[in-house]
Image 1 (cartoon, helix red, strand yellow):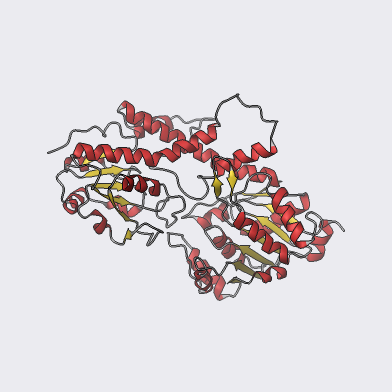
Image 2: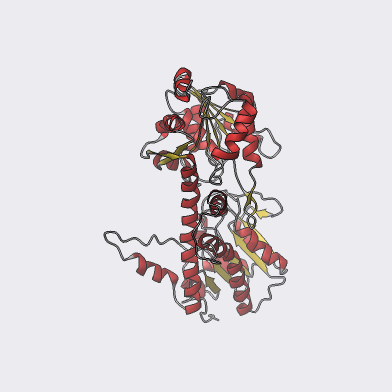
Length: 476
């Protein structure tokens, strides 16, 4: 029998499983469950000490994601009340399904040696393999090194199940394309890249995702092309951020305002003209941009070995961009140190109020937050750092104070690291009063405040890309 005939005998997709109840899996499962002709959706979550609490929360219709996610909790309440979505740690339920997706993180063990950590993903793949039945569809949504779907993932599924991919079951890669803070909207509205290991797998995966799309459409391709698409689109975004960050550093050095320059460049519009100017900032965090460049680099080294034509002894443009973005927390540290010196305060023993621990504005997502290496540099130099974040209550090894006033009290330096909307309303008079210092320091890593208002209040100001203000006269 061909896979096409096996799938036809299995019938249409009705029962779905989503492995990994995180920023991708939760909204995906809820949206699948909201499709009228899908009968039920299981969300699979390990009952571990660190994340087992999600099971009970999700089954109550509560979202464990604490940032602002429009519509998510309401949708969860709807699909749990109708019994169409159930979260469970019982992976044997996979045997009852028509399709299962995996949304599991894929970090890097060693970026220099391009060694990814696929242990969690492969454990999920193995769980699927144990319960895989003929006619099922398996979809990897995790961002992975090009070649993974047709390589180690396929091999492991076949080894554990005893079935043959492309003959007994369908296999595809359909990478997520979501941003924290707009998860539901992104899944519905963004085009969905779907790459099967063969045409039958691509068609089956297209059948799975089409009902949840409102504006977006399915873009079919091969599994490897889908893997490259995902890693490359994040690599390009990282490259764009690095370009504006480097321009911001140039503008600081030349004594001009990067935002004036950005506005000027962005004003050139017309047919075929685009500059895709992003915004500079204190650093890039999150699970995707900080690693996907390395997945792309590893892919070409493995799949394109001996075939890549590239300038001899020149570094990868993409990896260089990654290094520039990794440097921005160090630059923030240098701005802080320079400003404290101008204020007459030694870094050792200085109290620094660090505002924002999540890597993304109005989110609780702390994965690879650039605030952490910044804080580490300060602590290493003997500074006392008080961290506040309105969405993050705790973080391993880092005390987070619940009230911003507590962080600001007696602060020698106030550092805006994340663009949470709460920080837009900070008042220089109030901040100076809470600080109690004659010339407190304010460092703006996200262009959140008006420099002049703080300078008039006697602050020592420094901001990313603000060469026009960073050397201002101190108002006595």
